[in-house]
Image (cartoon, rainbow, N blue to C red; front, side):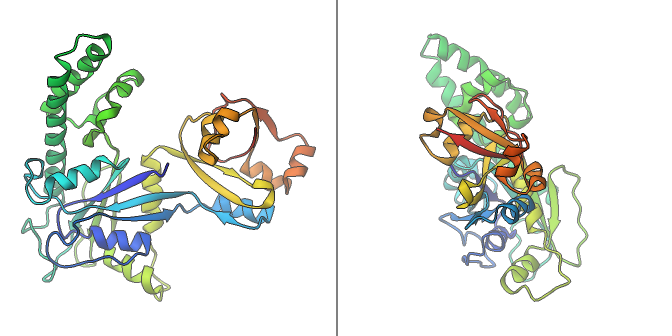
Length: 338
């Protein structure tokens, strides 16, 4: 399973330029709306100095970083939930992503059409949130109309959660801000609500505009400069912030990293949700590892680096044996026994 981030925003705010900078893939970029129709998809490696340290210690034949997928989605406009612009297609593409990276305009340009006619990041964010909320309300109503015909226990439980969501979203509250316990979250999983997805904001600025928005999970960058640097890397004084974006997206997905060293054949990082158990992590490495899981040997990456090798770590007794219910910790190196 590849975790996916959808890059969204109004037309001409820098989404495709950001996608190109992140993925090093060439895509169509133009100064008019709806250049992107079919979503562009690219895989990006997660920066990880710990992986490099393990690799240097183990001296394996190969090194492989964890990765996440970025999807460049067509620009949204007001009324998208009613089908305006590429609305329905846009919203269905977001539904298939695990989290949202929203790009917001904070730059002036005589070449790139500003569909809002002004630089107003807060208003842009409000438009996107309104469209996502409207679509979620529609999804709730459709689900309730189907469930009302059933009186079985599953339908009653699901109906109760949906009514709770209906009340809150009608008051303008996104689902990610509604407290839902584990059972309630399980009941609504099938609907892939848009405002339930975690979100991170990129404010696309230039050197002349010092725009700031008071939001958590927000980073201001010059996306065009980032793309130029990614393509040419000639400006040694330029401090790229792309790694910060990648790591921020990784964090809002609530992921942790564990490592395998495969008998010196490959040092590899793996992304799993926080609180994953050892057997579940095994399935990430190979589809049948979970069912065939017997036990696992685990050591923290720093302890292995200090020991200097896996055999030495075992010799001094700092490699522990765990069962399938062991909760994987960020930075664990795991050897699965099947």
